Length: 405
Image 1 (tube, rainbow, N blue to C red):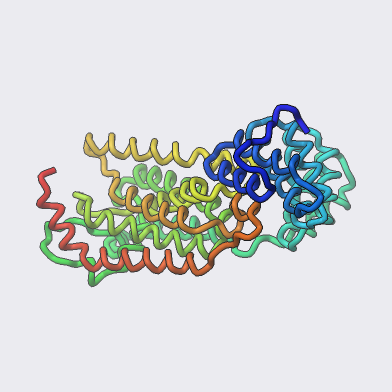
Image 2 (image 1 turned 60 degrees about the vertical axis):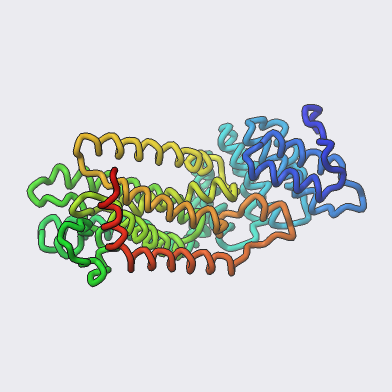
């Protein structure tokens, strides 16, 4: 092992060192995690659980790859790649192949992916690897028949992969219809002004959701419509893929709708505008889910996906700053909806572990498993809170009108 890694003195046994490594990864301390996991590997005794030590090796590799110390990481990946644990062996081989592709070593990566396919623990994992084998076979000038065979094996598309794109299409279609037929906008948009003196929203609750499917708001101005819709569906496509990759189709769709409701209620209570439309509140909720999951659970995902997660916070700050700045000059951006959606998404992402991409702690701490009951409790409590806010939205909006600012 590399001399650059020195075992930490805080722990002396394998489980304790593993726990230190997990805690460091949770904090984003890759250097500390590398030290702790390396100490766990170096200090493992014959009486220790061999699989646990090999898991520690994979943890050290993951931390070192984050530090871009690829040569050192390769040593630990080799240990994990020879594990007797099928799932761990698969993860290590897949990770090694990904790094080989990144370095441009395509023939080597192809051979590694073929090893990984044989160790894949699930049909979904085998399909993923087969797709990469098909692509690399074509890229390296291999047999077209072998590439086609690999792609056929890969056609086990993840269940629900069509859901995020279908939501984008539905948003575009309904928005175009509403732009052509303005009475539909009147029936769907969220009227948020209290100046009418009537609690109209309680009797028309569908507006909390339908406002996300209309854009523009002015049937005579197609430029504003195209800009509003275009920006929102691009962001929805990006955010949808992030959340689907972490949580799957069912949670993506249900949490998007919850996020839209949270954004709409915030808009109804806090916005000074007479109406609100657009999917951006739900988009902020999806980005909030991804940001909360990354902050609280550190999901085990490939480098490109991790880079995308790492940029979520910056994207949100920039968009909120733009919304606040243009609000000062009178342009209608509903920051109340943005913040309401963001907070709703952060609650979901921070309190519920990713279900399709394992969290660091769940991978390395063998005794820890996901608490499914916790997901139900969080969702029910959040839904109850939104219901209470909705039932009292008009009184809260009138109270907000009386505030001195």
